[in-house]
Length: 112
Length: 117
Image (cartoon, rainbow over the protein chains, first blue to last red):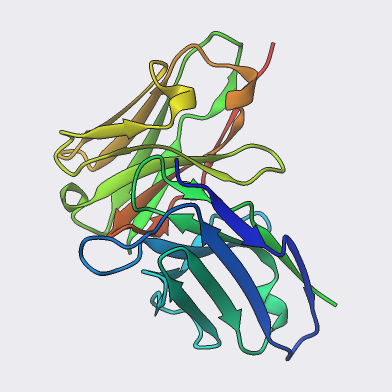
């Protein structure tokens, strides 16, 4: 199984400041089609997860451009350029290169 | 509107069975891989199973193999998860989700399964 490791697990951020979450996979997530099968999801309290970033660096429909994803192979990063109060929740990276599909432990972003 | 709506959750005794359903609307259901995920109370997300658009391929996480069965009815735009021999550790919110190119862009609201005597 591919192991996904996120850091940090807790992220207190002042509104307006940037934030960054790292995700590392135990093996390369590069698909034969040239894209990395890595997605970032946000789960707000009491809600279903929502897709933020797919294929490591593509913003999903309706996602604000303050969210960006980067990385390839085994190292990936989610960045929020200026955190807003509505960004509070748990962020997960997920690999979908092979089954079992696996998630990172989650990073809880909170507002200072 | 593209939508997934789960149903069928509830309280069941250890060793019992439950069948979850996911009703899809607003898109061509038969074109997409579909998955079930779950989230135990206070825990992270876990993928449970997925199924190919034509139902010809199914995959499961090891912990549910031999106990859970994923299926779909493309004529009824419906996804199901038959859960047998349920254990306390199967207690969770269960979500169905649609995937495209490995990205899960549509999720249902979830249905709660509680396994307890």
